[in-house]
Image 1 (cartoon, rainbow, N blue to C red):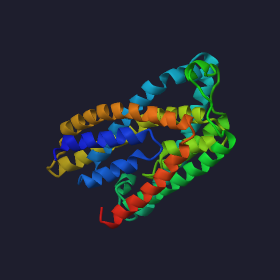
Image 2: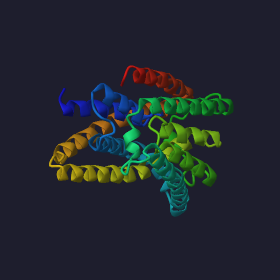
Image 3: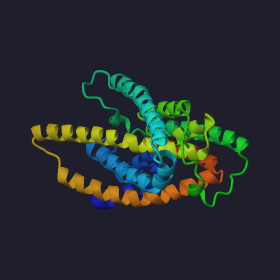
Amino acid sequence: MPFLLKVFILAIVQGLAELLPVSSSAHVVVAEKLLALDPSSPQMTLILVMLHTGTMFAVIVYFWNQWRLAYFTNAHAFKRFAVRAIWASFLTALVGYPIIEIIEHTAFKGHSKGEIELLFSRLDLIAPALFAAGLLILISSRKDRAETPTAPARPNYERSLVLSGDNVTFSQAGWMGAVQGLCLPFRGFSRSGATISTGLLTNTSRQRAERFSFALAVILTPAAIAREAERLLKANHAAALAGTPLDLHANVLASLLGMLFSFIAGLAALRWLSSWLEHGRWYLFGIYCIVASFAVFYLYHLGY
């Protein structure tokens, strides 16, 4: 199968799964395994991050009207959002990056170049992370359904959106940011699933949690792109010294095409996610993650 066709398949998987709380990374890793690709290679981790970039633009397009009404109507609303986003992102870094450092120094003890990405292809690690994400979603959905048995009809949601300060609280933002940090090292522990669930468990509404969770995703993506681009450049430098430089042009082309396709698929996924959130079907994503965890563990035992 041509490499670009494989990238197209990965882009569709990424676009459909990234913005649903089912861990796009787990789905893409499984797809890469089935397509005989190495998910931990610098080329593939960069392509994955560019697929994330495509879905990041999908998030911006889809949520822009809601963000404009909730966060950008006046200086006060923007300040409230900015303070919470900075606080949440700070806690993400504070929690996530020390865990990454600890894992790199323990899982790769004795190796000078151990990187967390080298564990991304481990299906035996992805399966329990998916299971944990599923449990968190189920727990949060029980609380949500207990508090709001039926979703209100909202035919003109954007018009009825509170124009000033319709945001999570400072405390809720902190919890969501901290949990997002836990998601960074673990493929399968869905970032959107974990952060939206945390918002629900801290008594914010589903719509506020959804908006803020995806705003955090936009903030996080550029840092992930920079990390993986640096990793690829280092790998290319090492390969050049060995006399076998990587084909960076082909990787860039594949990444850009993948970004475009994941953008299109991501828009479709976002519309589906919002509909399911509004109609109280959040728990089904938890069931899906748990079932998927058993499927991934089975693939691991088959030798993938």
